[in-house]
Length: 347
Ligand code: SF4
Image 1 (cartoon, protein in one colour):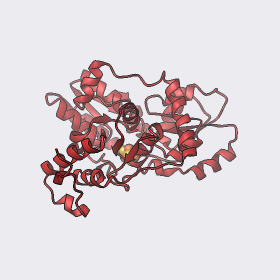
Image 2 (image 1 turned 90 degrees about the horizontal axis):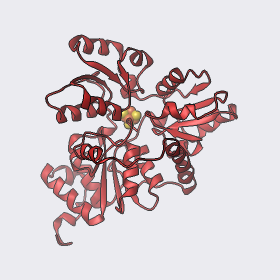
Image 3 (image 1 turned 90 degrees about the vertical axis):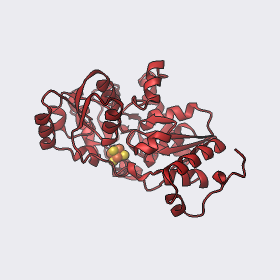
Image 4 (image 1 turned 60 degrees about the horizontal axis):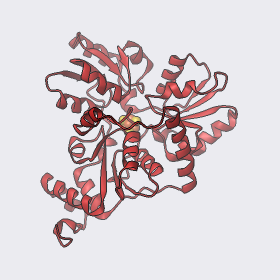
């Protein structure tokens, strides 16, 4: 395709992109992506049309690690802001773009670096554990990061008598406290509205309608749901369970449930809550993605000091977990089919 092709000419306004058909947008996205040597990362909770044009699908950390390993010059992250930041932390030499800067994460926004430093001043001996669903500024203050998959292991790596400040998810902090028996975890009062809004009445209703189904719930949900569930696991764990079971009630964002139902049409996957939809994730559209590639916007940048310190907290977690393991051929096949996410939870 020649450089003079109209597919390489940016359209003047974002409205011009909204007027294009889905096929035209996809054609433009693919052409522009090749031209920029860009890679598109799509989170599991993205709209399916975004997932369909993504080069990699998964959670933020797994996606960021994949992106760091590619020879792409540009990363377009279709997720929320802290995820694009994580990609920048791990790929400082690459340009990281987001189609819509307003796509933030309300859970990550519960805690700022300044507020965390104030709490740290009150607990100078405490270790700080930051869930990866946090800003780079918060990760930079932390001693170590964690995901929903390894949060218990991370807590166990900290001496029993040392208090832990756990930010920002109180539900995950409570789950870790319950699993480890630790009484010295000080939880930040943050939560993910998508998971925290799921209630027992919905679980009971789904169970009554599907008495043969196992109930699996993400640890970002409230403790009463975790206690009532048959299994508590990250989205990666849910995907593994979907491979093994024919009927599941799934307590996480709808995007993952819909994807699994699409992948296994002969199985029954029921959302624990029909309302479990992350509006922030759904802000990204094909039109915005095409606009982002054409205009090379919006670039995510980080102060280098914050980036380096955030990377240190992430690397400590990865070292503790034995580093990042390259997926097996079978795992890669499932990733390409959009079934197996690259890692853990929403993050
Ligand atoms: S699902 Fe929850 S944690 Fe994930 S981006 Fe949305 S609000 Fe944040």
